[in-house]
Image (tube, rainbow, N blue to C red; front, side):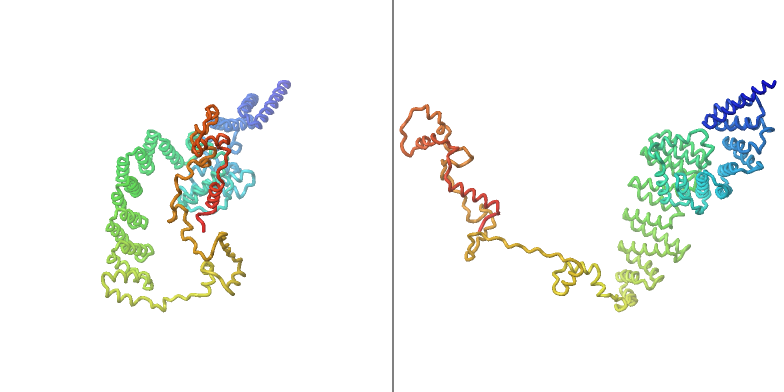
Length: 604
């Protein structure tokens, strides 16, 4: 008996060593086998049961781990195994049970408080969650501080996005991708989209392999097992919307219609599904069908009619030929008719269609609304001003008088408005214009006090003075003292020809080429026709047969007459033409003319 007990103890010790080694190496599957062998030796070993639960959790077997805890409740009390039980319930999406388990624990450890914050976040109890994380960050000092700050920023982002609560500045340093991303989400919830874009770009810069995964691969990651338990309902809904949009942009029309129809059946009052369907129809060039779909939705859901009608108007404008119909749709949105943005859009569109009367009518309706509900407000006066300017611009001075009188009544010192009013009355009622002109300020009160010295010493005056002309005397010395003055280069006097005679009047046509001068008669033709040296080097005007020495040598000698062509050819037989030097005078003269042409046109 003693030997068997000693053998069992030795085997248990070896198994515990194996469990420790496998745990350090992260091999929890092999560690679980060793723990099971230990439990065969001692089935109620508390440490062995705890190790088994941990191994099952590490392997993702949460149901089996929870079953072991519930089976051994006598041995594994709530104080011993509270965290593991609550964590299994949390991972199995039994959030309420996890909350009860945590609250029933006699001792609240840091890891239980951490899990408590996660449970509160999943239950969307953001105020309690924020308080829990603040307490953790304040009272704990370990290596998990960065993760707690990330979770704290996620709570603030959720409050801003889902509950429209203005978040407080927690002073969290944006050192990680998660912190930048959560801050961007908080800005989106506040409607600060431009700032949110900058934060998201900053977050992208903190991702190591940001260009590795495309959007389709990222969406596939959301299909992993257990992801749905980590996200709120609104986040899951947003993922489904993104899947539908991704299908549309990747030209998967049928998949896009299927996803958007499923989303619409789940949330009939939501705008995004019907907008995605309309966008898909527009990509298929079915604009009329898309507008009809939006019209039906607007009639069924009047609370969302404004957003839908804005989209319908945008589709009409995109077609390019239905601007007037788009204006009619916009004017049917009663709650937006008086808004400055809507007034500006309608006036611009009516002006494009050259419908000035309708544009003035839009101004009139908006001014009447503010006259009734917000009289003399800044927006009211701004609309009156814009209406008056618009009428004056399009020659409606008579109609602009009432607006200008209202503006001048509000501010009698406004000289610009008074001048516009006098100009308008001058065409309608000149006497009234004369009366109003008496209210204009006198020329004395309108004179401006100008410091002439300061004006002359200004940068602009100095620049003009430099460009104006020469500086002489003291002024030149002053300018030289201020900076270096560029010296003007002296023009060199042109050289006169050697044969220049100052008593003789120069030829007025000397600047023209010789051929363009009035006295040019051209070269005389026919002279020295047969002279050797004319033309290209080595050629002559005489016949080639006459210069052929071989033919002359073989032919019988004759007695040519003096002065005949035969005499010339006989002489040429002695010296070949290419070696014969032409007369020097004509060649030299030609070279001199070429040199003169290189120097310039003509001469003195």
